[in-house]
Amino acid sequence: MSVKTLSIRINENDYRSLVSLAKEEKEDVSKTVRGLVELGRLMLSIEKYKSGEASIEKSARIAGVSISKMLDIMKEHGVTANLEEDDYLMSLKTARKTW
Image (cartoon, rainbow, N blue to C red):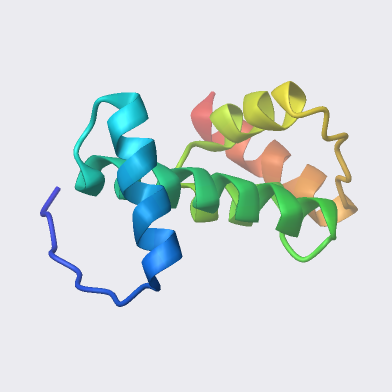
């Protein structure tokens, strides 16, 4: 996987919070930001799924994980399945391809 550099502007309070969090975690600020981005993607994917804006497949894509991992994550966060008929049919199709 290639790594890209990103430059952003944030306010002083957010910067101080990042630095403080990095110190607490004994990490550099870049690693802390990467962790927060990963967590943000995960939380966004869960919220979109809960609100019906995303299927489990789309949620997994947003989070950057497999569908089975996303199902485990949803379970860990107490999110109940809101499977639509299309989701069910797609999972059957995927299962048939696998077997």
